[in-house]
Structures are given as C-alpha cells and as structure tokens.
Image (cartoon, rainbow, N blue to C red; front, side, top):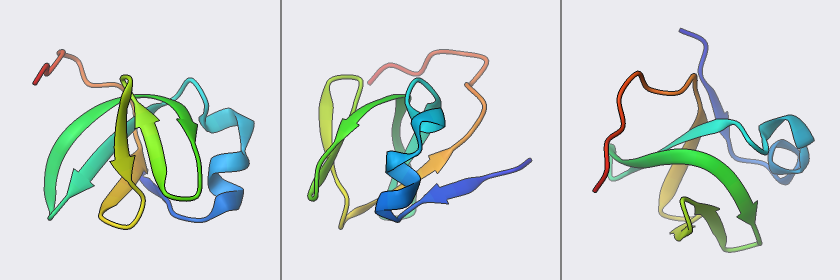
Length: 70
C-alpha cells in the first residue's frame, strides 16, 4: 500500500489532495478519516472537525471499504 504522510505546507497546497481520503492518526491510533476540506497553520479540517497539525499525522490513503463513524 502506498502511504504518503502530509506534513509540509507544499503537501497541503497540492490541489490533488483536496477531495482525497486522508486518515488522521493521533497518539499512534486511528482517530478518523475523510476528505481533506481545508487547513491553516494550526489545524486541518476533515469531516467538519478540526485536527491539530502539531498533535496528529495526516496520511493520504485510498478510502476505506466501510464507514467508521465516531
């Protein structure tokens, strides 16, 4: 599986990532996943929720086959 961690502003600026599935990992655990909706210097918005860029990792992946709703 090809995984790319989104960590640099150039990664987020890449228009290909918008509308792509992104997995959010916090404290080495999956916390949510969804489409990348937006970002600023501190946060990333996925599924309408803010996720800290300092506390979480964002990994571009193919969408899951099932929906995991928290």
